[in-house]
Amino acid sequence: MNFIEAIIQYEFLQKALITSVMVGIISGVIGCFIILRGMALMGDAISHAVLPGVALSFMLGINFFIGAVVTGILTAVGIGYITQNSRVKNDSSIGIMFTAAFAVGIILITFLKSSSDLYHILFGNVLAVRPSDMWMTLIIGLVVLVSVYLFYKELLVSSFDPIMAEAYGLPNKMIHYFLMTLLTLVTVASLQTVGIILVVAMLITPASTAYLLTNRLSIMIFLAMLFGAISAIVGLYLSFTFNLASGATIVLVATALFILTFIFSPKQGVLWRSMKVRKQKIRVS
Image (spheres, rainbow, N blue to C red):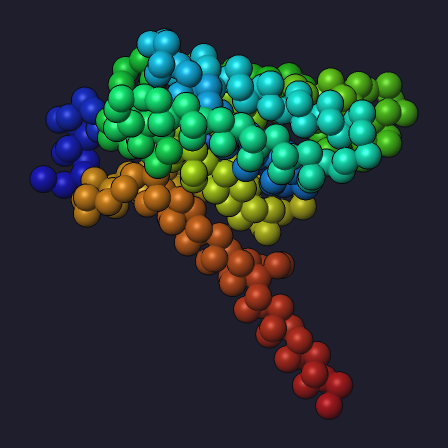
């Protein structure tokens, strides 16, 4: 049975496809602002910081989305508070908070009788996504997309020139925490698809691929959404066809797209730049 027929016949594959595509889209959108602000490490921090919330949710018997969002936001606020109220720099405060949160999560996991569900949270298993998870991902995706659309100008100015944003009277701190909240939501939405370990790859890789192709943020966002969606679809196809880990396969497809762009990009590609250098050497000689 081919992939298309399987999608038509099996409901679990339909849910997996919808969830994966939405995760790829919103990860690409938020990833654009993350890499432009030089906050890739923050994405890694938030993705690891949700682990104790997930573990607590399983212990209390509630939806893991709730615990993950709470601990993710608390970690982002804690990082900002330490940076603003001490001599410790941002990268150091990120390292302190996310490693502490991740350690707490590991300790909480040891108290659980079964860690099979948490294994899927760590490494992703989109083929086992539940209807409630799919709808939650769709809701989070719509919230993220609408938020970026409504506050696009504020995010644009504060990302490229924070000083100018302050001159215009924009609240940079509020915008930062707003973006951290969106980042936490995207991370939580990605748990079932690629897992905590690999979610930072979906945040960074499609956006970085788009960054090599354009200098305009609006185009970069649309390209990142496209690359994220393609990675999700192709990765799910390979995962289903060859019985591979879904999260890892999606990430590897995204990485392959980045490598191709890194080599063949018309302006930033290594191949074209080396050809230009050779032409210049020939002209000089």
